[in-house]
Length: 388
Image 1 (cartoon, rainbow, N blue to C red):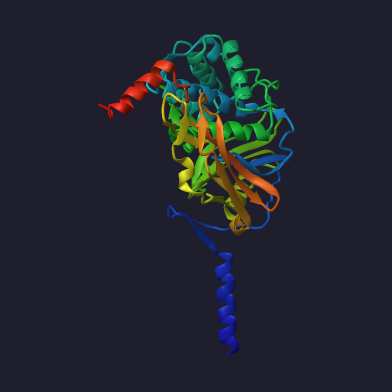
Image 2: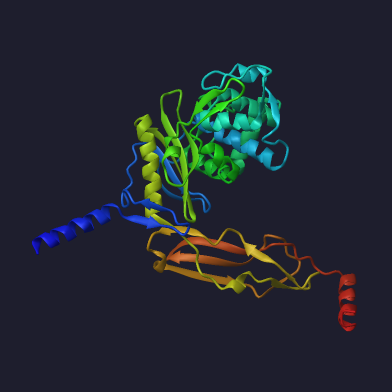
């Protein structure tokens, strides 16, 4: 009997050690360090991408030399040009003298060399190449100074209030950012799903010389659900990593700066990702679907207009705490014209006790103009004739 009990205890222990979680998409991962977060880095931040909810952090607003993280902004601006069809992956770039003169990490581009934008993106995402980064920047703005101004303008628009860019590569120590701002930037970059192929590549070859590039983010080789991003060592010898992964309906990005070693930065990122997936979940509150029905308009040029939510009805919560949440919703029955697109007509609020953990306005999706005298006359004629 004692032997049977011993065997059962061993089986239970082994089962707990190899506990797994499964997700709607069928992915499964081993749960490690579920209840604690171990990070060697001086500064770190963890954020759920879609909701932009920060889950944990340390020194999140402390500034540091952005180094190669600067290239994430360069990539974002190039992606925006790809999105608006100004450039394409197959466009061929002629390498400038300035790009050729870049120092530090590079793929040895020659002045006058012709190379596709897709190859340059590969060189920057995988290899942190400064020459390729400049060549990309010059496809957006002929003057690098104009491109840097564009970088800073974009940072402001994204709410990266503690970030300043001095160049497009990160070579200057005057490029300043925080892990909080970098998480915001990374989440914006990851919305361009076509980059995943580049950001998760481990090793490749660039251009006619077939210069080899190897990804310093070693998690791309092994981590379940990895989607990017970038790892590097700054000019001051600071180990840094940004990493992202998706499992089920939750996407996480983590940033760590000042890791104790090159190897440890991957461990730090893995610990942050594991902690996030094991401790948090995406929660969609249940609300009355009629809240998003068209809303009636009084004295308007149209009888009703569409409404939408100011932000997705989705929040990130600690696992197993959904029963503690209370959902409250209200909406006006009608509106008086004139009203503008974006005007609030109601709100959905989620509370945990007295604390509001989520709120989203119900807002007009289009303008509701006041009907003119002529319009009212036509409307009267239309109703009197039965719509004929």
